[in-house]
Length: 509
Ligand code: ME8
Image (cartoon, rainbow, N blue to C red; front, top):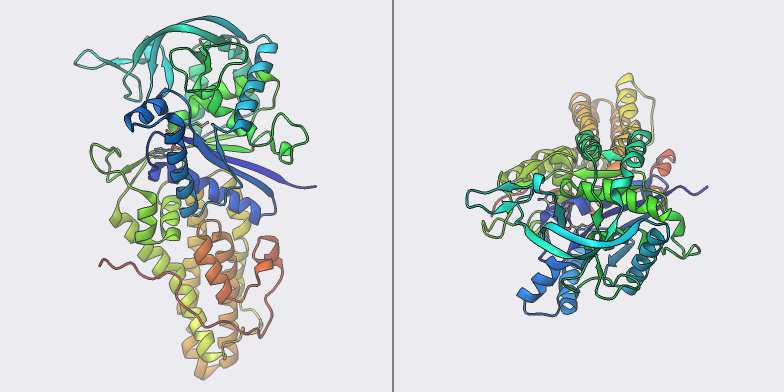
């Protein structure tokens, strides 16, 4: 039976250029998608852009462009960012595409047909920056008397005819769902927030707008466009070819995981399952949210001029180095601060001096002392066996960490083996064995290759380019670079290409 895995990123608003926050969630999703492919799954990895709503309409007006021209441009920039960050997405969805408009209309019809939509009048607060409705009790009043949302976004008073979704009736079903699916929301702190929000009672949700028109028309309701979050969330089903049951990706629904930022948990963990249940569709297995990146402890903002552009960062430090840093520096669910010195430290201590150095030392000894040929596997000492055992345990350990999105712990486990490899090479001193016991030297070098191979294999999702080069140097054929391939031993005596460092030290110029 095919093991399928469907992973998504948020679809990003096209109101401005991509920054490292967007790149971060996307890289995490890419690491997971690559890992699952490596582990034998048939993967569907989706990213894309969220193009409707008032926020985007306002940004287009500010740029002096009509919304379609504007969104075409900004969406192309996000697509370019995805490519430059090495994303292996299988599709890139835009909410202005016909396939998406059709799916939204159908989802609306099904929810309506099941009796969950009614026409009314909305009167209340709305934050364009968050594209969210707020109760007065959620707002705080600034010293100047203006009210702001919990996110700090300004709010305005809105009065308009609107269709409503009967969210208030979903409280018990949602609470039961969370109880029956304890892994639905990660991390746990976010789960607790969601559960207490839902326990506090839910209001019916306004799901159409009538005061502007940059949105998907509500079926058979002239003047109404869909609330941008209903439109946006639907992207995840659109991309599976829904509602066509014969679409090639139909089997991927429900999604296995939505990776999102902590700012949009309520939409994904409350509204989305309620919409899906109301339409009679299955609910995704998990919503895993990441914490916030600041830059040197400061919130990124245009006014502070500290917005970090991910493509520039990758061009300066190397793409794999940047991907590694993001996955290693902080737990996925927690907040963290990025800075150039922190990045340089990770590059130099863990990549250049860590895995890079271990590989370079081992491979250059083979090049010099074994005619560049892979030594055959000899008799194992207890020390050899201990190191190999630790290395061979990595796939199982990493699998468990990936399934819980504790990427930094997966890397920490890999690094324990790198450090064990360093200790091993220092103690065994194969360079000294050359004169005293050449056979043992060859055994030691082979143990090192067989240790570095699983390390490089499980690191491929994080650093695909560099680990590909390292596996080339270890002589691992492309068809056995996945987890299953680790069971196939390397061929004794195979000629290895001349070693070349994969991770240069970063030196400030
Ligand atoms: O919310 N640190 O789009 P958006 C970490 N269109 N992650 C960050 C970040 C930061 N400083 N800043 C942004 C939307 N992100 C909606 C989503 S989905 C159906 C619709 C990431 O362009 C994080 O994943 O505002 C966050 O949730 C997302 O970018 C928000 O992107």
